[in-house]
Length: 512
Ligand code: AHR
Image (cartoon, rainbow, N blue to C red; front, side, top):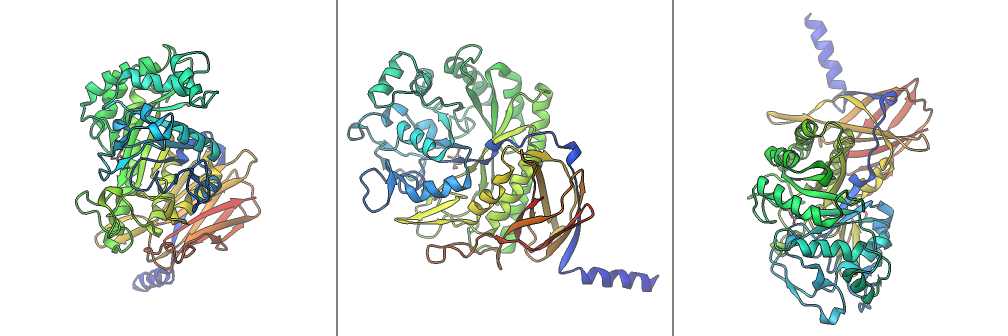
């Protein structure tokens, strides 16, 4: 017996470099589409997200631009493939009056950005600028309406301004401002964080207000097919979802939002780049909590809407840390490391798993704010590790989700543990299977044996994003420290795929 134990111990020791994990993919059970809209982004008037990040103004001669929007950023974002972009907030949305951002730029009134740094903005980036930028990016706009400090008329006028093609006061005004054809915006947020910066409302009160706003945003049977998204719960506020699902007639509601940030502690968020393993582990706990959150909000929605007509829209997610030293605390500018890369990969895997209900999501935020995909400094621009993950994963957009069963090793930190490996898979319209894997363990590689049920494939190729340290990131002086490379750690034989994932890594495989 003693000898048997020591043989086992030896075997375990020999695997210490690469711990074992088991996965089954069952393609015969693949039926739900991974809605590409879960790959959405978020651009708020916050810090250097809009001004300096996306937009530098038409008269800027130093930074190449298309109608004021940065060419370098546009090119990078196009490659990443953004299905939708949410604007103008966030908290800012409930202070924003869209009519201040149309017409001659010289005559636009200014606005004090009360939530974010108290800076005065000149409103030079408004509705036309945003919607034309979306066109340039090939992305669908998602406009967040002002409920907290606006009026029903203001929001219904905005809908008419951007969507009405006939003769009407707002369509005429749009034409006077140089846009003949309506843009036809489908996605509309009815306020933001109504439980907080959007008005500190109670769920019951907001549900009533929502009904009123939604009534005047379109016609009674929503013939214009607007996709109206109610301001949703703050993380695990399950009561918020319960009340909204109960009190809002479902013919008035296409989506309910959910906001969840991977923050360690709102009073002590920890540094974005110079973090410890403890900080890292806690961030990952918060990130993986997304799975439980979605399950519980979904269970409530299922009770009222078993046919899953109403989508769960996770329109703010991502890592939130302390701002970089010397930057304005109201600008939420943070570095982006391999921690953010695995956070993004693991979160997208969770969204894929829940693709029946989660049909839209928005990473916060797109440029220079929170978990940004792009950072800019005057005329320079860098891609972050998160950018690379969003780009590698875009093969799953609109593909059919393949259900995954997984037995993962633990990533152990002190007395606590988390599953080290997360996996998702899909089959695209050409029949190509893609598998995404993350290893959040920063100390150990993982060997994974994947049983391919109903998948006939002979060859496997892939890309990996990894780096020596989890704190590694790109800088303006070293912009390519973290970037995807060819992955050679996978082999396929007789219906089994073997993968060796390095510590702290994100891998996307293609089977053929
Ligand atoms: O993304 C930053 C802020 O976080 C948003 O403005 C708000 O909606 C949330 O609290």
